[in-house]
Image (tube, rainbow, N blue to C red; front, side, top):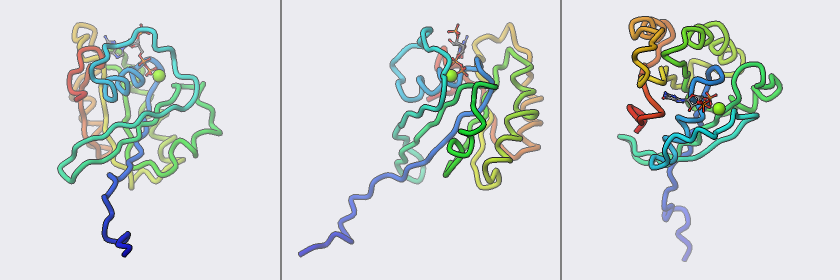
Length: 170
Ligand code: G3D
Ligand code: MG
């Protein structure tokens, strides 16, 4: 007798998450860290040329989820025509800046939030602000206070990470 309806060995839900931020802030390194925790930072990772994604099972308080993390090339190289595909069905967005690069932080407000609002229903997305390269404390250009003000304005959480040391990535 078929009991297909009841024997759903439930597959974890798939959550699409997109990475946004300038070229060079460490998006690809963060994704590599998250999906391959044992792999050290790969200095040969070349700038991403289009869209690519990687998946990772994550344990959450609500059970396992399969995170599908999309990564872009930064700045102008990210073709406008790809943006609707990039944001389509996304559940979350991770906005990344480099704590040692003030310009990369300014770009979030000037550029990436606009793209987000133009191509996705920003209110339905979970948003996380990530200041990467926190291992380079001596070269810091963006204070935590500044980042927290941005978070308060747009309603998101803040984290400082290092894809190099792994701090706050796992
Ligand atoms: P992107 O995908 O946002 O363009 P990448 O950024 O992941 O390609 O990283 C850009 C450069 O920053 C790389 O250096 C990478 O090794 C470095 N990087 C990424 N994350 C960190 C970090 O947390 N700390 C430090 N110190 N460096 C980091 P190269 O020299 O390979 O271009
Ligand atoms: Mg990249």
